[in-house]
Image: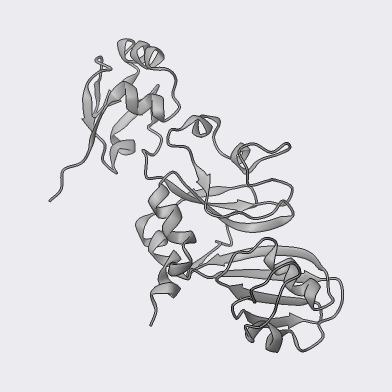
Length: 249
């Protein structure tokens, strides 16, 4: 059985955004950091960083934030950008302010453009991020689409053919699953993530996407009770669902 990694208390809390090491030391001296019911006065003490640490350690009376290895789902609303640097509202502003100071930082797993809503994953685990977005993983994404004009009827055949070429590119798209859901509504499921791919696919068919919403990544669905702008920490079972479809024979 592998032993849990350990960390200095002041380094752990500083990396979780609670303040500088000097500020953490002041919290410890004030008795504001409590582990298993006992104050930790020595900020330089090393403690095991276990998954249950947030249930055992409090800072100023509140449970510890999740340690590194955090993964979460967020219901991205329209109008916010998946970026650390661009101007305007960012998805990170929807998270607790302290989480924006974490090291390693939280990053989005892929992106949704500003006017696309839906399921967005974020993590501070670089290996997990790259595993999900790797083309070898073949993790699918499903999008619900609303269109400016009625469907032409041949979208399913063209999208499934693996021959559709987007403007400005020299490699055809991989086959895309298409389901008509109304005269001007459809869903598409794809494993690629080219720039504005869904919008450009329908533009190639002479149509225009008026609303775009992602509701599934792999086998993980956006919960109906997760409101726009809200987030939820993912457990191991939910993370496994992300790879559920890719793992199927």
